[in-house]
Image (cartoon, rainbow, N blue to C red):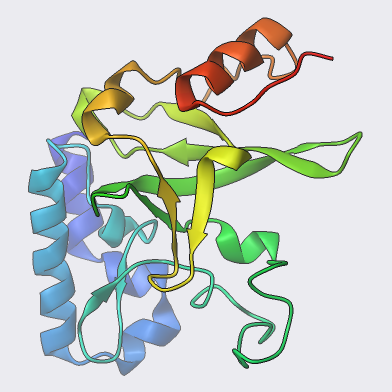
Length: 201
C-alpha cells in the first residue's frame, strides 16, 4: 500500500466502514482504534491497516480490539442463543467471511475472503485467504483446503495449523488471475502443502 493510500485510509476510515458503530463510539475509542491501525500497519511491513479498511479487527463498546468473527457478522440472530440454534455444527456462510485465521501459536495469519464450493457435492472445497502481506507476500490470495481449517469456538476464529514462516512457500495467486481449481495437478499440490487428503478420482 502506498503512502497516500495509507493516509486516505486513516483520515476517515471508521465513519465510512461502519456508520452505525461509529456514531456510538466515544472519541477515546476512536483514537484507540486509529492507534491500533498504525500499530497494525507497522507490523505488516507497509501492507496496510486492515482495521482501518474494515476487513480485519474492530473495537467493541469498551474500545478493546476484537476480531471480525461469525458473531459480529450474524445479521439474523442465528447465534444469539448459545444453547440452541444451528452452530457450531452448521454455520451461515456469510457470517464466516472476514473471519480471522490464526495458527496454534496464536499468530494472526490473515482472514477469509471467499469460499469455493464444489457444485457437484455442495461441499466447501477451499477457503480463500488473504495473509495480509505476511512475510512480504503482497496482496496474493491463497486457497486453503477446508479440511485444513478448524473452528475455534472459544476465540471465535479459525485455526490453520501451519507455522507462520512456512507460509512463504504456500501456493498462492494474484486476485486478477485465479487458477483453474478443478485442475487435479493444481489441487494435489495445494493439498500436499497443507497436509490434507486428496483423491483425484
